[in-house]
Length: 413
Image (cartoon, rainbow, N blue to C red; front, side, top):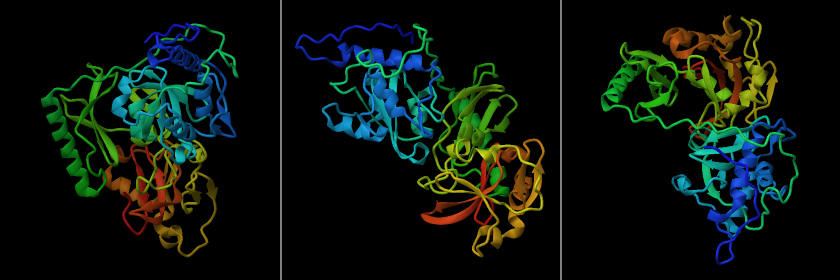
């Protein structure tokens, strides 16, 4: 979609009332938001992203709402109603405002952005940068879609107020929108399903609940290093299987844990697509307060940094639900590291990624295979999460292909 910079006075309909079809503020907002992707300014305040202020600026106002969620509530009751269904979004004009739910990954402020059409929107992400995203993928992997709305009638539109200067260039770069994958052949899906099922049963027989239930049938995803430009994948509760070469039936296990933390989705052997780190719990129930995958790319990022070998020592790092990292020797007799000292003692050092692995996880990986688990991507840490509705202390470690957790003396999962 090519965008042209055309700023005009606001026309009105024959009845004298501005309508979405005749509202130039929408195009102005899309052009302005697109231009911000090349600007160096960071939309941050004390480490918190200013996604709400970004959208306000796109329509010529600022500091009207304390959070994105407050903006959502206000527009839903101000005569500019929010449409709540994601299936209604294709009817929205570019320049509409899209809202997403609150969670710990966005400081419970919610999230908001400028819709630009074709399932894409522009918003401020972690670190204060402005980026383009898929609405559907954000809903699936980051925070739930709440609704969309047009700007308030009394917002003047960009140009009436300019709290921040535009970048020097005047012609925005054309937006890159990934095409929807084609529908795979039924026989290809059937073959992939049988191939994936074979590996599922083989590994589940060694380590029950390693994969968990399927989250849907095999589907095509873009992958540049195949003849078709796509590969068949299937997602499970605890991982992803991939079939890049259907002729030889070779199944690979995706770097899903790495992608969730970094937001870098692999779309080729050496190609990646940028998304937001996932604001979903790294362990425990889906509504566990945290920590999130995104936490390890933010407040607890130190856990991802290369570490020296500490083999023979006990796991020392702890991460709170808010993502705060601390290191201390356990003192409580009920601490999982005191209850299972042998299991939580570091026994292996992964030279490739420079991380320590506790004995229980090292044993579990040796049983299931390096190709299924991968090398350690973080140092192990202790956290308290909600499991089956009950708060429990667990030991957690991120590996390339999955996250391992254990409440000890239970098996790792």
